[in-house]
Image 1 (tube, helix red, strand yellow):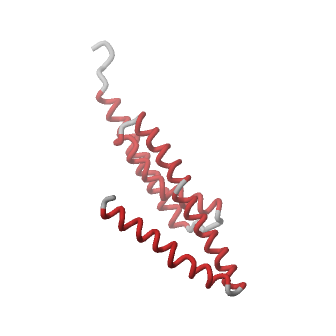
Image 2 (tube, one colour; image 1 turned 60 degrees about the vertical axis):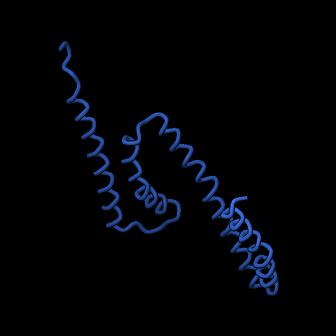
Image 3 (cartoon, one colour; image 1 turned 30 degrees about the vertical axis):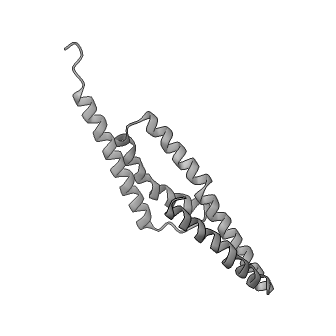
Length: 132
């Protein structure tokens, strides 16, 4: 076993052997600590959900797109991530969407539109004329 893998495994094992039982024992001592433990478990469940299924979905879609399109074609669309995140946070979580965020999202969308239109115009101009 390589040294780095042994180190990581031993630190992982040590956290379960020494830290987890003490944290659990401290949490069980009172009802308030128990509710804190439940909250902590929910937080860990959210972290696990964000790290596993969302990552698989995101990288799966990205890989599928990379098989069909060039990276230079897809890269500008990564600029949509913050704008879509702000919009989803406003719709799903009810977070405020102040005017400056709307303007910022509009600037990002306008920049992406200009980029895509410019690419299409350049492609159209490079095409040979019909019959010649």
